[in-house]
Length: 190
Image 1 (cartoon, helix red, strand yellow):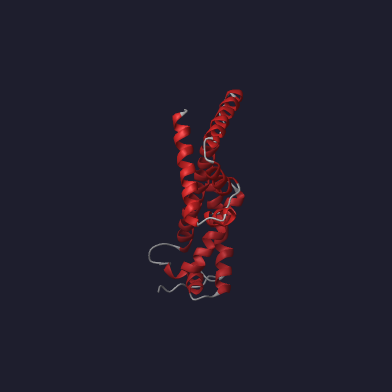
Image 2 (cartoon, one colour):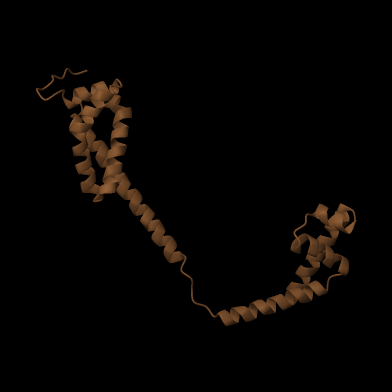
């Protein structure tokens, strides 16, 4: 490690980073006091939003606390290292915010309801109901009763069999035959 001399104002930022890497919270607090304004100013210039800049500052110093051991004084100054970390996080934050806005706008434009003729829709729906009622009337009373219990009353096949006092296989067959007959009748009368 490079030897860093302390200045009259306190330890140099590089030395504070080295001590932070060793878990020295006081050194980290001093480092924050020195470099926090640098990181915040850069984040604010990039995000142009005080809340986002504050979030970036917090994320940056959380990363510095956990990654201080990765700082290499041979590669860059402590100030440059902090600026690089803040810059990356600020750009990521702006991109993420823009992506969320784009998704929101995309969803909003896709969820607009189209104007339609509600009278024609009601007429079509009533005609469909008449077709289904007519198809239900074509079922045998046993099929209609099993289908009614299973689909309109919400009972399981086992419960239908118990209520009708018939074997489970018979209940399943009645329901299956009823559905097949309904499908055939509805397809024939389109």
